[in-house]
Image 1: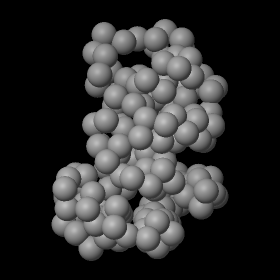
Image 2: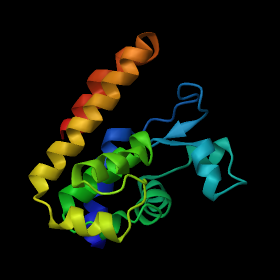
Image 3: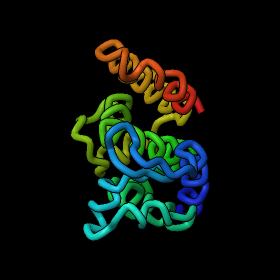
Length: 164
């Protein structure tokens, strides 16, 4: 299943982009989709220079530890589902796990535990992905409806990312 991560993180890095951004929508310095604030959750002494110096390899290592392992995405046996969940958890946080759980009709506690794993792994991957994507689209459109000035420009990219 480690190969699942390697494939998943490559797509994620492309989606997040390699450019260093001085201030990512008020979240501080960012590269490979990793903000300084998020990086400091694992590495409290990290600085702007650490973000600027991130390589694809160090970004992948961070994503493995902070997302893949933390959210137990490795327990999902379908590589495409696992990759989609990594991408979404990085993009929106653990709310994406609720989309998975709602699609599987299990308790929506944002934790990938034994019930979620059993249900997700038993479900047809195409149906599971369709449900996750539908919930994600609803979420993104609701964000835009609440604050169009801030989010309308992001909607096409979010929907394209979701559809992959």
